[in-house]
Length: 412
Image (tube, rainbow, N blue to C red; front, side, top):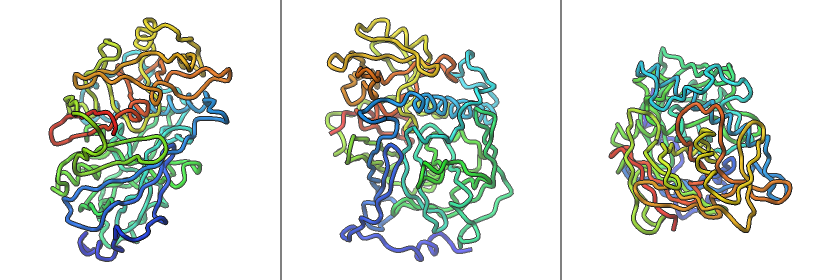
């Protein structure tokens, strides 16, 4: 087997002043990625540029309620699996576990069925083999389709005796073999990074070119044995990063990015509001408020809207005038006249961030009303708010694994 350094010599160099338009990648709802710098020292940070596309809307911006229902259930199943992994790894129930959740699962949506949802994907390399993966702060492992990675084609692959088994909320499962190999994202690279090669596809054909999931949550949510780390935490442990942080800045249209290895202050204006995170709990979660109501906010790049237990959502919406409640495929939703948006403010790190038009609405109903981007879930797997795209479009969000905190600032 070659070392990672030797294997990397076989890869083409990337030069920042050449035309690399052919390297543009697609995301799902968001999608595309161009490595934005030349090969350099491993500690130098990298910016992954992202572009967006909409997939939960019909013509005229009408929200696909069936697609949104699938997305909400997919997120619920993902968090049910994370709760199961946490208990297996720690021997304890997660403190946010909801006793109201039906632990058998609904059997309606697979974990990876995100054909109508939101996916952050970009190109990474394992053992010289390039693949597009979903960047997801709500899960912990890298799991890929069988055709995405062939250890026989790698000079640096290492066999392990370990397998993974990830149970989905619908009763199905993904099983496969764990490998370690050289990893790179842009010019950043590390040794012996774990990935799971599933024996069956974990993505749908509609997700092309995505070939799997790349989890960025803490290791206690992993379905892999503890000795294996996801790529970000492997780079952190191997001192390959100038700083163990990554930063999402998501915009409508062009200009979205994932920055790894430092904080890019050009992505935001004003000071950063910092909020503490307990890494032992696995999630990127923090104490927060919404319109003064105390909540636990889980910041999840793999979720579209904001979902929370219906009782907590009703506590919020009962105090807001002008909302029209309706149920869609079992989810509690709300509409409002587009010219009169409701006031919804999240308090994160002690600072208030009001949702603007970018984040407060998520498409329209057939009668032209706007749909509130906050959805109540009757059987939520956890007692917390899963905060996705609606907030990401407003802020630049920093995930700091060195100081166990998240930073929030208005986008520049």
